[in-house]
Length: 544
Image 1 (cartoon, rainbow, N blue to C red):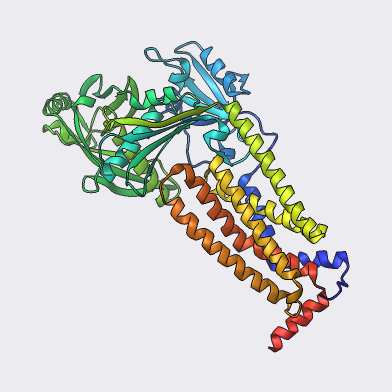
Image 2 (image 1 turned 45 degrees about the vertical axis):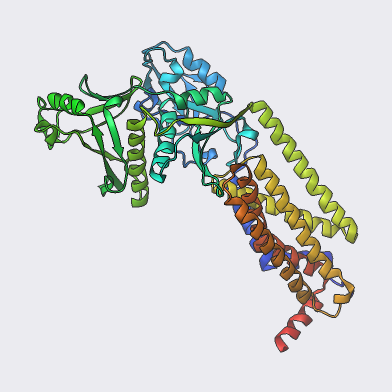
């Protein structure tokens, strides 16, 4: 290899002129914005608002699509500053029942005026219906192993169709939302080999027994017109959620946006049909609807209310059509999603008296938040130490500090981009995902060794620096293909425990092949050749 005649300043300038390095730098900056790390962030944010709660009636809402750093922060309750979740719940419990108070947030300076109305044995916190958490220091969502919480894996005791299984998932999610267990997510997984279906319930609560009690309880459902009960959960024979009996009814402009209406049918008993008719036949008609609404209650809490069509005044109906409208949204797609969400929520409430099947617990465990933070701290420390040791080992092999800098920056860049992707896609990072991330970084080191070896190998001296790097990138791409061939089937095997591991490897090596490996190759080329050499090579390629 010819002697390097370029100065350090010239090499530095040439490095930042490389398009691949500039692209990597741009993506890293975007990833940093996506992660939005704020180490000094403190306070308490709203992590959920229970349907039909006093907080929801006061206008408070929670959108699960919000990033963690954009959640609404609670500043004070009746002038008392809120500093921690425990402090928030203490202040709420100190309020007198049936009292009026104000919650000030960073989005509503004049605050929410709330009337606290506990029902039965409900505590103040249950009546208020707000779930809170410490303000996040970044948009990175952590699994329960790292943040603390509980996980239940449940198996239906009966075989369910896809529609029945989807209804089961929606019913469980809505039930948990209604009972104020916000921050609890219900998902489905299946075993690709046996086709068995499982329900996974993950909660920020560290008490798995509390979560299972909410899932298994049979809520008391009532539908009332005025103060008269027209049917209960026992009267609901079927909720028709198939495409023939449920779906979009129409969308229309509303203010500066769109609002969409969805409808579905239910079947109620003949006795319930009689009660419904006996109440509605005495009501007045106002603009196509009856003068009273039908309100739905779960365990004494009003969940929602709907207008009643005038046809119910004149005939007994045992398969009523229920119509729900979403909120006004900026775009048609968002309006459709919100309307469909409202329909599924009501379907789940009407089905909550009984689940399509019993559920048996396959696996359950809990992790305290303090233990989760300790695991996260240990994982980060071990990961950083591994990065330093690997980069240092490779640098010692080639006896160049600049090689160490290149490898370390490439690995850190890859880590930042992967975390940015996870934050943007709202993916949870658990221990399995961290294992996958470390494995992906390991493959990155292997590829960087291949690239560096090809550049320094003496028998390649007759080749141009670009030619040597092209040969190295071919090897890198073949390694990428074999890893993908192993990881993609592993991800679709349906085992949730290893899905995060496989997904993180796939994301990590894909980012590496597309961004960090080419950028590192460009860096090595500038490092190991002079401007004059690169110009000669460029001229040679153009002539040939």
